[in-house]
Length: 164
Length: 389
Image (tube, rainbow over all chains, first blue to last red; front, side):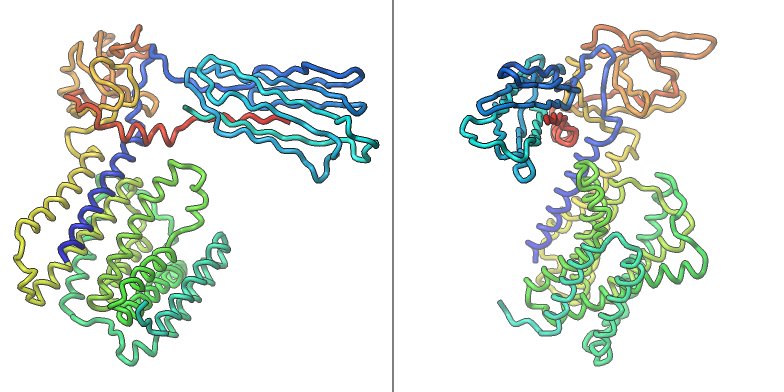
């Protein structure tokens, strides 16, 4: 009986304390910023994309990028062709970032089985001011013996950096 | 597992299935207005035989019933009184006769049925703790607003607030109602719940409380009602073993409750002194990130006496800044203050007017604000998603 009482009163205290901590964290009055103070800036972004290695006759298109997206359209001609894109990611903010997720996948159902790709993972840690690159190689393998009926493939990648 | 009475088991399974279905069809008026009331009316009809046979009674002890009615009235008065401190808002409910009847059917009928169900299962399985726990959990799950839960799920801050203001109070009250059902009848919980519900449905204005006040009020109330009833039951049953066995324990429980209430009031700024957690480093070395400062609210008279070098808390665009006064400027009879963070290179660009000042720094306590800082950082964790195609 006494134990039940103690548990209830203990649980009450814990919950009330936790809520007080939460209330402190969310109340706007807790913000304390000075004008001249350098506050943390979060700014991880894509700063460049370029086609680095292009087989003769291939068209790397005009790779586009914004702060958070990079798009390319590679056109390969014959088996053995390769186009390599290098995407530069920069931590232009003042907060160190760490890689949370780097996930690439190709539409193998609707896309051409003849097109292959390889991706290098970006640096796990991206300190403030540092850069890292992701290299994506799009390949038309030499082992392909016949011209595939489907000639395109969509490859999508998501890279997520979070605060370290 | 101990023997479970069939009717109780059947009810538990039915409620479980209903929760699963209601989770799928939450966002429909059809569910709220038709399915939910109909389900609970059906359950009530199913349980009528138990009521008729006297298996469960509306009121086992008139004195306890009156006691609960008084507690409910105090709760309502206390709840309404909070509006004078935190303000009122217009009730979202329509107060036409038809709307009131409709709201009563939609809101109160399920409550009656839930409490009768709780009572039936609890009394049939009073020695089976597992069943009692499952019952309490299920009846808590039945009353969770899944629509809101889903809408706040992706936002960690909103989810935290929802858990504190809705789910934790429901858990506290759920446990209390099961305890009351075991000790007497469904009438104790029912009278409290109907009072609460009618207050919300009928009043044209309601107290405008934030999540922290709602959560604290309900959790503390549930624990307080539990202890009041426990004390009453013990006293009435003349259980000498419990009664007066440990005066020290009793005092410590009361002290804990008083402390909890005081802490909540202190956090809410109901006293002349209020705490603030420091989230940045602009006032280093005076105090650091993770410290808590206590500031004193100032009267109009005191506001005019603030001198240079004082550290003030002032309001700027809904943010409250804690900086030191480095200059007092008088212009056409109006007083302005120039402020600066101790570790900042230059003064703040905006001059502070007297009406922006909230209080004056008194003292600080080192490190104890870190849990709030960590929580803040966790909820405001920055991330960037880069997409490549």
